[in-house]
Length: 504
Figure 1: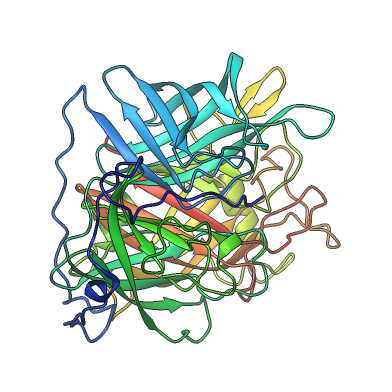
Figure 2: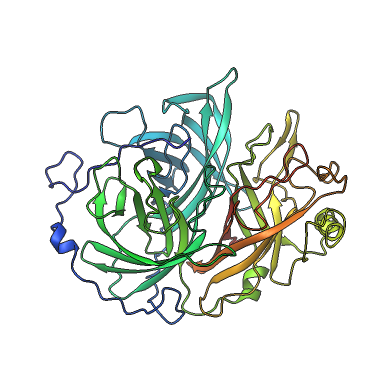
């Protein structure tokens, strides 16, 4: 599924056909950078990134896409533009069939705001798994996005799968951050992150989440990174230096240093001035490198709060976003690997959550015994949107309300790391797809109505006054992250949840 992409040459003169400026020498990049922070997770360390002002109506918001890779079109190395005057969206990136080092528009279409806060996207042109971009007649529907205007966006763009005997549409999840300027962090500035789930990394995680302190000196960007594993001793921290350049994908930091223009470039990173962080990771050219953040899969993150976040305010807010589980490939008439979801509209006592709650209680010390502890007060309830159609259910967040079949229990905030929740728990109820309230998940081999809980980690921050929550769970944790399959089993798999606070 991961495609080796050609990366733009960025360290060339201003006469280069790509229009990239000349930058200082390698020796200048390697100037010693003194970090003032003793620990990357120090709540008192770092300065707040300057907030970006939301654009006026009529302006185009441009974002660097990452960190997800999909067949045929690498949305992790692309530019997405939302034109709010024309309600048009376009994605430009590099495809595996092209010979020129110039971005090609791989997706174009329109978007319309929905009452739920999502953007409904219609794709007039879309890529296939071979990298071929073709017109769609009729246009593809079923792509969605949530945006913090001028700061970043989350989306599940669609690509067309023409392999096999039938044509199908697959979701291509993407996280994007504003990419207007290179970092200017003259004082150490902290970011928190979670790594991206990878279908190939089910037994050998090297990092699940972490923090990095970023310092810039000219074009040199130094990261002092401390990765962490869920429920395991922390890996050794490390320092790396990359370089930032203005490119035709925006202002991006490349690691390793001086690796622009190389097909083996490992990581492209956008430190948005708004506070969102995304990185892409070229697994094909990485060898055994864990990249700049330790996980070797790319990350999504947020500027670290200067003090503890208000947990009560976080769990009382409402959120839109996506649940991404690349191994959750249960046959459905919609792509179950990425689900548009919402959280916070219901509570444990809501009628909509009764099936979820009943299945959790039924397995708490009894039944299949898969729920050792019930959700705490620091929990947010929600799930995916499902709408019944003549051809079956579809994941449609443009109207109606979401299911209640997932609980995010943040647990306690770290006493030494503001915004970090290292002991979070994720609960999956008996009505989670491919099952439902009327057709619940039955645990294989036990006959009991099933539900599971497993450890996770979350990072929480604010972007333009909105809370963002990024959560990761691991297939190699104990117990492993699990989602139900069509046989009633609960196979281990990595997954992530990415949420922006609703503003309406």
